[in-house]
Image: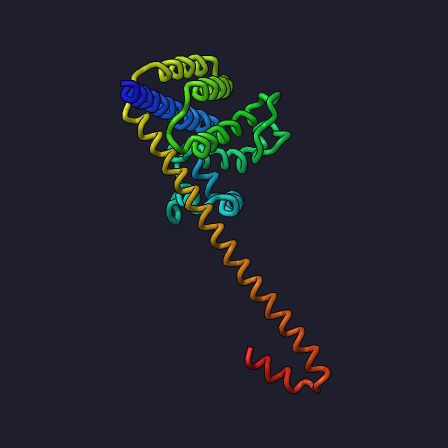
Length: 256
């Protein structure tokens, strides 16, 4: 009986922790993406985004900083341009950093590190959303969050999201606050599960990419070691050949 009770209790806890993950995934994937998109659209409205993306200087900047999947979204084909409705948090964050740096408040800590806790600027909150999304992908890739983890992260992310919404309008902040509160308590929808699955897929892609990069680094190191061994061998043979008149060295170089 005790074992059955423990198993049932564990199953229920696992179900609740999975629901926590789904709710938090939907919060960051939907609210986070929509609010970052709203900020980007305020600088480059959909009606004029193509003009900005077609500029030579803009294209050169973006081709330099974007990953290939991101480039394919921004420049899907020759003469065509992407739309912000298709951009995710990672891409929107990079576009805001690259194309909107003069319109946004400067960030003391930069875009590639978590902002200081006392920085409540719009730029800092945009960067926070990117880091929250990354944390959820990597720290909770099991797809489960305890109630304590869920409550802490939910409250933190909610505050940041509402600060971003307040830069749109007071009405937008109220609408998002109502929607966020509703998401926390309403029954989960199939879309929440899809958002969670999307984060899981991102984690797997990130893991595969890191493994591939590690393999490339190892291969490059092997080549470097081989080249170093050849260089030492050539140097040693050159020293020997100087004493012997050089004939033997030339012969061994040909063999190498």
